[in-house]
Image (tube, rainbow, N blue to C red; front, side, top):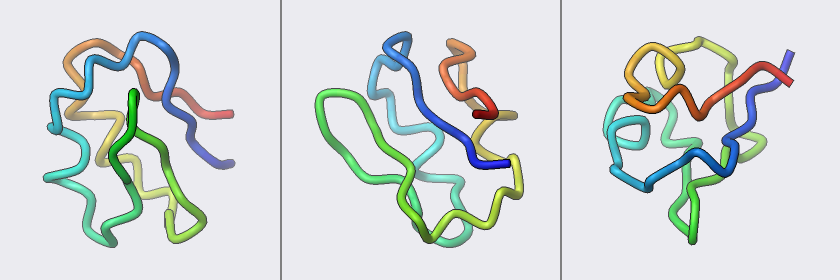
Length: 54
């Protein structure tokens, strides 16, 4: 199941720094690209709970 970043994202960078495959890219809010291996690391480090399975 793929992950998505919701509007709750504050673009703090915590998820991007921890992603082992560099699948998170910057924008107004961050986005998860097709390189995602669905490891869940980003979900664990997101301080706002903005990353959901989806």
